[in-house]
Length: 201
Image 1: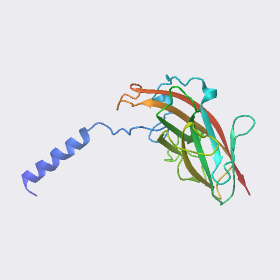
Image 2: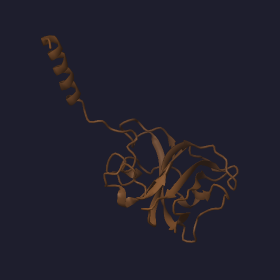
Image 3: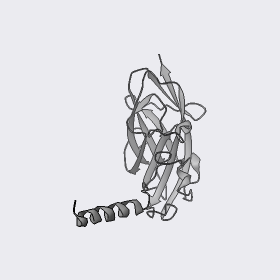
C-alpha cells in the first residue's frame, strides 16, 4: 500500500468518525429513540383544540362498520393466524372553517417504546402500516364532505400474540415543520385514543 493511499484512507476514516450522529426526520415515537409521544418533538398549538370535533374512527375495511366501543376505545378482534384490515379515518367535519392540511398517526404499544425492537406495535402481532402521514382529501362512506385521511392497516396475530392495548396517537396539522426545529412552522393539535387488540382462539 502506497503512502498516498494510506493517507487517503486515514483522512476518510477521521472524516467519517468526526461526523455528527445521524438523526431521523421525523424521528417517530420510539422508533429510533425514546420519544414517548408526538409532543416530544412537536407542540399542540393549532385551532382544533376542540377535540370532540376531531374525527377519529377505525372501521372494518369490508363492512365499513365502526369498531368504536361505548367507552370511546376501539376494539380490533382477530382470529389467531388470520388477517383483518381496518381503515384509520382521521380529520375534521364538513364545514370546518380552517381544515387541516395533513394528518399524522401512529399505533404504538407504550410498553414497547423503550425496548430495542424496531417495531413498537404489540408483540406477536404482524402489521403492515402502523403509522402514516397523509394529505387530507380522501373519501370514505359515512364521512362525505369531511376533511379526512383514510388508509388501510392489516393486522394478524401470530402464535405468540396476546390481547394488547395500543395508543393511537394523532396529529391534525397545517403548515410545514422546520427541519431540525420541529416546534417551528407546523400548526397542530394532538390527541390519543385507546385501541384494544383481542385474539380469538
